[in-house]
Length: 102
Image (cartoon, rainbow, N blue to C red; front, side):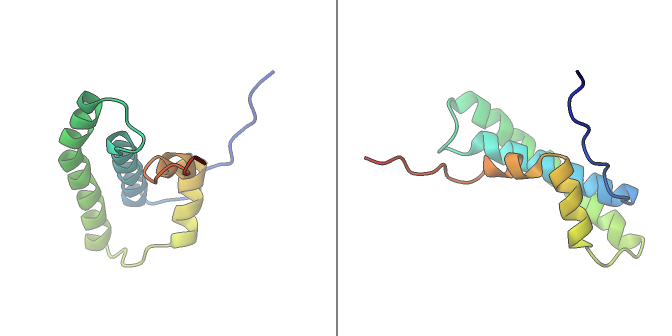
């Protein structure tokens, strides 16, 4: 039996797609650095070292959008793309885990 089919990604410009991809890569790195969820310093260090390059990629995608005249972020469309790409789970790693009862 095949796994359930994911909903299709909404139509995005190339720069919007690059922005979403770069944003999620940054979120993944921040999740690996999160001291409340991490397990070792080496993994957090490697993620921290990768942050500048990923931030530059996000900056470049936003610069391309702005240069091309894409002056608005279409939040609903971008949120739909983030959800299809598992953005809610990925972003959840950046937050603090629920406090355990004492």
